[in-house]
Length: 267
Image 1 (tube, rainbow, N blue to C red):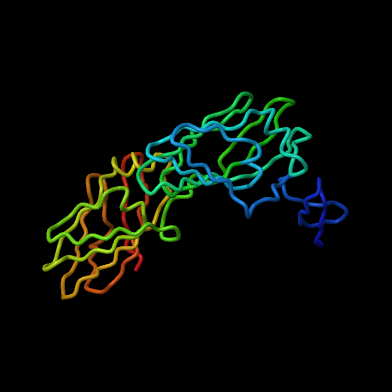
Image 2: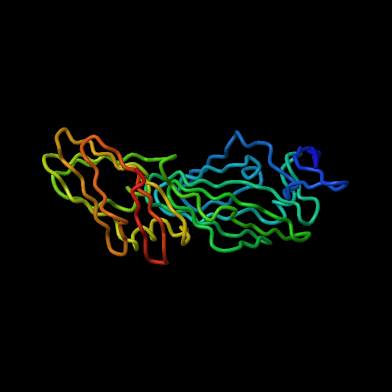
């Protein structure tokens, strides 16, 4: 077995040779503009263009409410943009990503353009993303599939929330999905509560069973005040979860059923 590099429509792909046969990646077209994302912040529904897809990444700010955006028509996707890509043959594929940059609980739902078939609902929660493949299946037909079940918000793209209530609090779904909570118990130990499973499902409707997201919980107390965490309805903590003064815990929320989550303290 040896390494093989082949040029396909102006793009290079690395694969392997086994005997006299080559094994190359399935993707036969790629987008070259991956470092220049397209930014969309329309305060309303948007229809994406082939030019925006050609950037490789679409940064979508729903701008005040959840939005349902429409993908380009199959004809536009197949035609591509200039020399950046064309889907000349059935089976040709392009890959692009749509990121929801909303800081609030606004979802982005994708709808199909004319001649486009979506495999399953594609709903992107706040600070989440979906990597999509668009495959030419006919002269005027494209099938779009989400490669990742959900790129869930977590510690790598955290939106910090600061809480200083001098009382027990309930962390909202938006705060948890933001990925980072700095909590000052403010004068005494506190027992806080997570959002319910139903609330998490509403905020992240595309989170599949078995998927997870992480939350950093930092205790910023100026005295020996411990945070104890309890689960909201249908949220089960695996073992007791406490965070002492000046300690930080990483909590993993795992969707275990259609309306249930487990929470594990990783550290």
